[in-house]
Length: 406
Length: 84
Image (cartoon, rainbow over all chains, first blue to last red; front, side):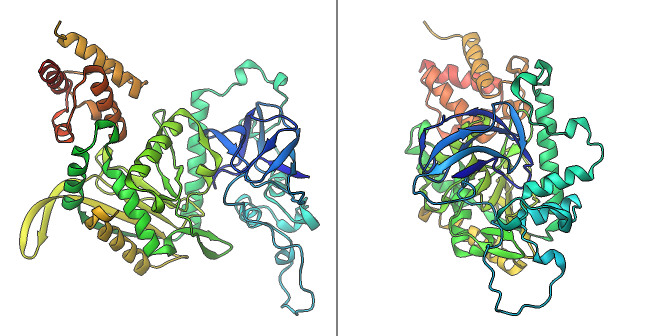
């Protein structure tokens, strides 16, 4: 038996609303199947499972809003293995410390809190919410404290929660028609979610910033020639070159592709680029383009088209929202020259591109006018130093100068 | 029967409305920068061009993108190329 719980689709997600089940008891699910639609501050997401399993029981009714980590369904793993929860993203939530300790090795006396079994996510949340972990009762294996335990404890700390922030799992019939979220609520929710994630980033992550100018003459000439061979539907946008150049630069400088978790850099092998997509109603979402380094330019253009359509249509998948290994934000379309980004935790870097605009360019003692792109990097100084960041920006430049090899 | 300027504009408005449903393309002035006024990014603009191609059978080379800034530019370009 395993539990399917409300997933966390990003550092800024605290609650989610079950919109609809896509399965019924008795259904067999396999890796990647959609189990439910869940509404978050960033829209409705399709939640996948990553284990082969059978649905035993659905525990929540549609329209129910619950904190992250709340059990939503009971599932039976098809391989018969016992597992506490079902993974709903490719990148599983940071797991609690292993249940088995080696008692024979003498260890220095640690403060009381350090001996508690606490998941990294719960520990972070406790710091944010000001919860004393020694006072929290863990509901996990061997009393391990999970995120939802901290949230429960935090609720008790607040004597009178404001009605607007209160999260109650109401049965659908108890909801009045007026309770339906409005566009204003949605936007306010998204602003709050962005504010929470970015405040945390600014508070916890010591950023360093680098910028470089890149001569785009060759890349744009190549793209124009390439696009002339294509029908209008097959054309490639310049931003696709940028995505691929970033992906290839990450293979050269992998230290910027990963997460800062448990006070250490966890470099990820897969390169999933979170691409910032603005929503017409306001706000933005950064779903991941999976394995961007392995995709051709045509495949990347198709992936981008698919992702933008689904983001704006509200049909993103849970894995796309939670497993980006770096974020890329391109604001050139809106005329901005340089982007100074804020890292999306637990990622360790964010790349920003401004518009490609004609600028004076001096080279070999000659002054010329060329299409120039300003690329910036916001790096997590805990994870890397400016030297690594500089190598990364240089690698992007190198790949854009050899665009035919992208 | 040759397509008229009014028909072209109506179709342009429809295409723009599809891309930016919350905008009012009808309120565009003849010389307003369409992308800037309606907040259309390069992805949406490419979709708009695909729509123009499908509606009028006009193939717009990428080199012409930079010339299609205003409603007037677009209408005149389509008028010239749809009839040729």
